[in-house]
Image 1 (tube, one colour):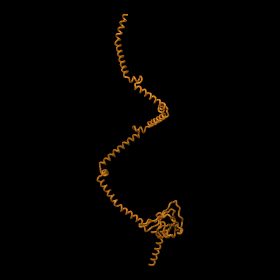
Image 2 (image 1 turned 90 degrees about the vertical axis):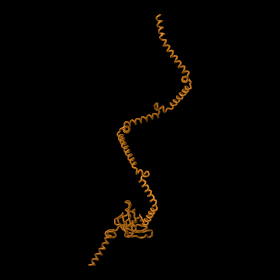
Image 3 (image 1 turned 120 degrees about the vertical axis):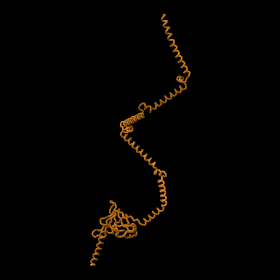
Image 4 (image 1 turned 30 degrees about the vertical axis):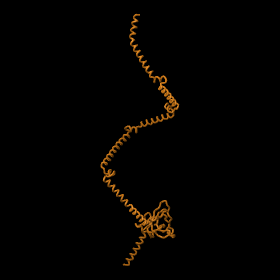
Length: 336
């Protein structure tokens, strides 16, 4: 009885191992093996034979062999993908850490671009195709070194950070107690009221502007008519057209005004006339000629006044003697 139990237990272990290999796709008698590939790297630390190979994050195969190159220039790592999976020429292979310390690694593969050609098919490791694009692992020592440098830099700038924090704390206290311009802005209630009043007036101004804009849009008021009246627009266009024609005529010497503006002979005549008139006015001012003497001779003015006075007296005497002359004429006429 014990022997039978032992045999069944042993057979169960064998079956469990077979199923494990079947699930991991290491040994699968029902499926044909996939294609073989390899990469060359300078350091194979963390990689193990039988380790997983992931394609786009999914388990796609396993590492089949790790060996030194013949010339000693690096390490060759062979791996096999599951049936139906292929890599392209621009596929990128990277060594991904399986733990935080980086003591375990696996090969991660990208899908590559759809336009790139597939790598050659090889079912035997001797004919395996090489994945050329390889991204090396980040050594944990390098990460630790950079972390040490970062914390060292923080330690060096620690006093400056503390000093800046003290300044910020001091400024915050001043603002909180109402000191300085910013403190007054934050803590002065009157300033808040003034700002609210200014905003209220600004809103009133905006409301008024909206009313004006609405009236203008409707064509109300002078500004609205200027903007919306098509007749005014037509009149302005006509006026502009007439002004353009007038300017054209002035430039082309058409009409009296155009000739006045553009005729040099007329300008010369006006200049000569002005010169002659200036000469005559100069003579008159000097008392030359009849008109000059009339304007400048005071004696002639006195004689003229005396002549007018005598003439007025003679007219008055003739008016006084007119009745006597008439009476004498009547008397003499009766005796004839």
